[in-house]
Length: 118
Length: 114
Image 1 (cartoon, helix red, strand yellow):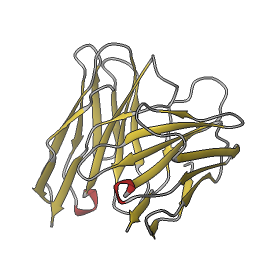
Image 2 (cartoon, chains in turn orange, brown; image 1 turned 90 degrees about the vertical axis):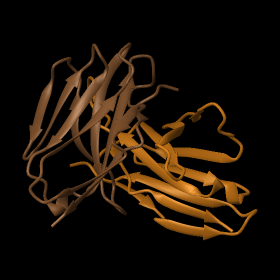
Image 3 (cartoon, chains in turn orange, brown; image 1 turned 180 degrees about the vertical axis):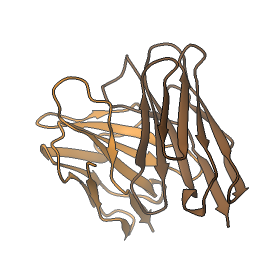
């Protein structure tokens, strides 16, 4: 099956610093990638939709200047948490939809990144 | 935000027991219903994608049914094994959203004791 990698798997950073998380589709191309986050005991919630070659679309309540998304190629999307604060501590996970002719229902997920801001 | 509910939140069963979980979702504007199996430190693994009312899918000892008119899906595991221990996620997509955008339930955490 299709594989999505995510790096790093775990990161601890100090308040005020920035952290970059990479999401790669290893064996398929993805024009669209999605970034979710999950707080304890909550469901995965979509933060933004990352579109190759264009600006990301952010969900209501997600600060686009704080969570910078770059989808530089058909296999790579990055999420940068700028000026991180303890309340940004969460589990971040990406997904990608294979670029196929016609309709594709499959979504493939990375293993996620646990961010802890101290 | 579309609401997806899963029950129970957690389940502990003995090896060999059969079990089932429920996922409820909005019945309007339905596009697809996904079930994922998620083990700690791994990527969620797609089990099923169902799109048609009445769909039934099976993969080994795991099967799922779909009722889009009333907005629910069941996941069944027959003869649970310790390796089935994981969190099972249900996710819904609707016609009004970007293709691939999923709304998740909180998951059902299954523990199978040997």
